[in-house]
Image (cartoon, rainbow, N blue to C red):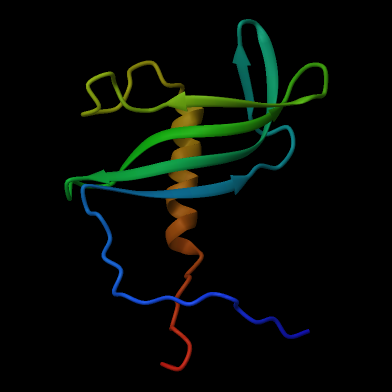
Length: 122
């Protein structure tokens, strides 16, 4: 099946370095991570971790968006803000299991070994 692109493009894109973000998604084996909010348990099955670099500072984890199943079996989204209110360091009181999720996301982003060569430059 051949697909064509019905779009034209010109210019030399330049990224904005003030706030560069990368989102890394990871899936969990069922039953390996339970999130509890207001006394209710949620079985997490996916996390989307947002890493950011503001003004060329080192990369930092900013938030995690979890997809989970609630006690009623319905899917819900839960977000954990990882930065303190000043935005200059980690938020106190974040459970260690969530920091493990961040570490897994950071490791998987580097470990998958994705390399890319634009077409015609191989």
